[in-house]
Image (spheres, chains in turn yellow, brown):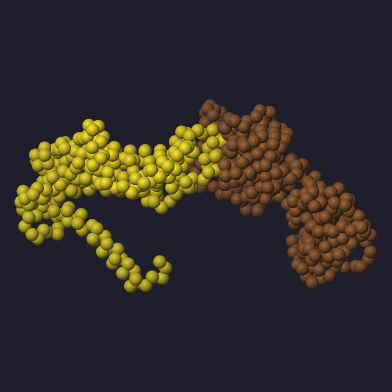
Length: 282
Length: 355
């Protein structure tokens, strides 16, 4: 970007700022709405500046008015969602790193068949297999359990393929050096492969955590009891059919609260995340 | 500490490609054996079979008198230095060197003392807390050596360890490897395609071609008496000059029809060779009985400093002659190349040496 004319710089910045505004404005607007009374929200136009109800609204959403979301506190909902998102992220990473390890570093019969089986599942979105999966979960008695929320979402090809691609870039000499150094398969996995995959794991964790956090269809199907709802489901349930009955200010507060954990994960892991995306540490 | 014996070792890949076609080499204790040959000749495969990284299709590999065909690289008690060093990128230099010992359950304080003393020998003491990416190529090479030495194995295996270094460093490391190997007295197998490395390092030199051993012996013996045309042209830089011969009743005749003027050692000889340094050039026309005299046209002169190489066209071939110091000849000059009769090499139809 050397020798840019001022005009080009201006246009570039204008486009970037516009992009940020388009992305950020709805979130800002949600925040603004979460600081006003219900009456202000229902009487258009909604002000563009935060109101004075921040403390009231947030304390009511967090600690009062439990009755609204089917008798479940926001804390419980956040806990459910956190467990689910963590379970999905950790489970997927464990399963996929192990299967990628097997496929890349071991020679066994039907190796490529298994690889293609995994690969083909990429072409089946969750929605296609949702009914059979639901039936299996019912038969196993996993409705309204964390296991039922988490396990069906763990199996996925994407992460396996990502790890496979990464493992294939590890030089054969490194594997051989470890063999000569007396490292068996487990030692090689824990001492060499896992530390080398750190950045990839971190990047995947961020992506998968958010994936788990924002799941809608599956939690909706597999949870009947309000206790087991995730925050996304609860948000939907808070919006009742008659507009006037919906406590929009509290919906907005809950929405804000629902955004916080993913943001925290991204911010805290940003350094690793970016590294994992751009750099392979070799 | 150990001998290495290869008996009729073969490697056939599942695809049917025969990479090593029956190789027997006996390496005595404490000696450094260099496997040299062009790429694809099977030298690396052979090394990897000694290491246990490749299965052995036929024949036996014995280390210290014990056949190791069926046991893995860990139990063979060998250490290997790889071409690209293969250092563990996430470990510090110290841990890279300690890793093999840890896996073998060596006590912590012994690991520490061994790593530190090895680091001292290799002048790595100041670098023990660095990671491989913070090291230069030469330093990484040293760490790779250290990782091998610290284990105190029966056999060192080197897989083209210097090919990623620049020329100056390569010369330096070559001397260091030789000294270390001699001091430690560890039997070693060293694979390279660089004939200079091969000549200077080897106690035993094994020249390989197309999966077979062409010649085994002391480096200078091989240099002076190459067993085949392949060895003659592979060992030595610039390579040996080779001239095709046709026989006749009066004696061998060169491709352009000039008679050599003396007899070949056998009637089988169809190729005549002489090394660039075993010939001289002259502008005079005097008779030189008993020497190989070739009228030649100088095509190019390469002054290297202490010596010069004349590229000439003679007897239908291109030949190279080394003259010491500066060459007086210029491109385009007509002169005579004089080969010393006792330094000529003769090869038969199959490319084998005739004496």
